[in-house]
Length: 473
Image 1 (spheres, rainbow, N blue to C red):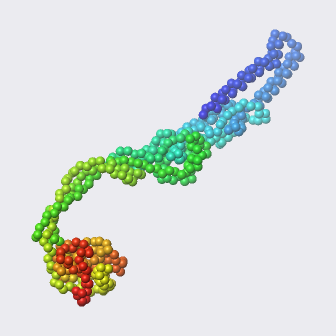
Image 2 (image 1 turned 60 degrees about the vertical axis):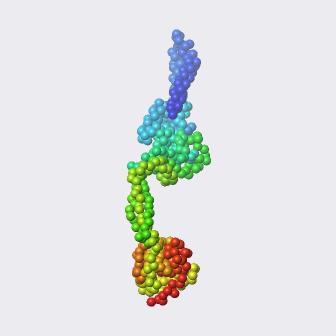
Image 3 (image 1 turned 30 degrees about the vertical axis):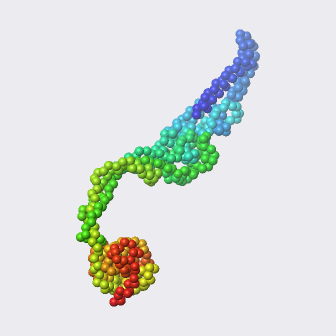
């Protein structure tokens, strides 16, 4: 940065040495030596005086037409008598700008001074200073952040590059009492390359990290100055400077959580209950345990979890359920009542296994959400559930027959309950495979007991036409 100062000092010394040598071997020197100790006529003195005066004036005029020519990148911008004044001005200007930007700056252009003959010119230090102030381009040494060989933005130093990496790692760090951060790394290669840019183009690490996390460039800003010189970044990389690579931050956390331990169910059997009945003798109680995981995250999203260890805090208590073994009694009267409150409308008949029951709709549109489903005969509820395409369903055992009620909205009874003929057991609905709001209906089936008295699977008992058991009332 100060090379031009050394050059100026050597140039001045060279000029003074040449002037001394020129005088030593000049005719004026020879004449001075010849006249030494001699006495001359006054006219000769007058002539010599005139000659010396004229030569002196000519020499003065010659020397007065020599200036220090100030060049800016090889272009003349003015003339000065005192090179030291310009040197001091440039040094003071750089100091003021360095204080303003908070970083060392220097001229991008090459500034030089040359002692040269310029007849008819005038020295104007003020004009030269103003020209330098207006035309100098200030630059500073910086470090360009490069991600996967793609230039991003310049920062002040290599330490700022390290800070950018730290900020990226911290961006996805979680703060919680049960979380300990073990490791964070950035998958992509992030490095710094020396560059020279305008001080206004130097970014702080927080801005660079925010840009990389967002994956977009700052609006209206050039990433690289036209004066940027990065030896290790080729032209193709500069062209792709705006295409920022994705950043992937991998973190490994040690997470400690309290988890429940489900209780098991133990069964005992008694003939004092029917096979469709059961009761809880001892309620179960969940236990708890402290589990330690190593959780791997990518940009904050969990991608892997490995259990490292666990400690039992409280052991679970098994639930004891007593199940019945007695056969389900036949409670049917043998006379079925219509299973829909208010009668309803028969919308589809029995077609064997292709449609193993009948469909009954609500009796009035205004009451479609509140139509009760009735038990066709007295019996025991042996099965309830929800399954496609049946939706919510109930199966009642009557002795010789099973009745089935499908697509229900809400159930009023549970497995093991005894029901009476005509008792409301559910609300009509459209769960399972039905057709929207207009699909509200009951699919009702009657199946002949195969002799086991047990409902195991849907095709176990033969379906029969329900209409053969009653006429609509």
